Length: 223
Image (cartoon, rainbow, N blue to C red; front, side, top):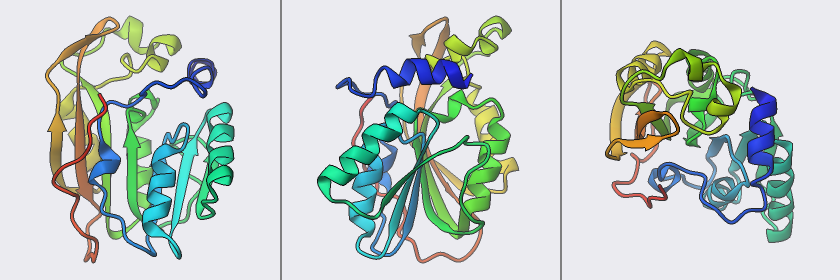
């Protein structure tokens, strides 16, 4: 799976195309001093945006498995002089961050790639502080994706074969211990590969008192 993702997305590191399926970062109301994490950070655009919002004392992390994308993101951070953005290579099922250390988690059209989505969401819950929030854009399958494609690394890397149904998606988040779900935007169903999918942006939180502002009411869509 990792090899298929490296092949597909490594080749896109220098391509001026939109790789997202929603506008998750547009809903995040990060403030100075907070800690933000972007899962599947790609070229690092959203991480750098968040780093500017939480400066000077906050920190933004980008987690990705594609070394070419990480190299591009690090070079952009250096070129722009943004010093509070850190890019780490890691599997989303084993995030290299301490327990209860993060205020905001975001991701854009990436979690559908994960082999074990339950484990990814448990990791999200683990790193969020009590009251910490997530805003994630992703795709879901309108009908279950046939098994022949669900186990095909190339089809999963194309951002459709790993999709699960919306009800299963929400159940997985709830099982990780996260609460207060809200769908902020949602597309009509569309054909992608051999599946009918839809994209949505969903927000929620780790239980506990919070001084974080709620997600913004309007984001910027790039579908």
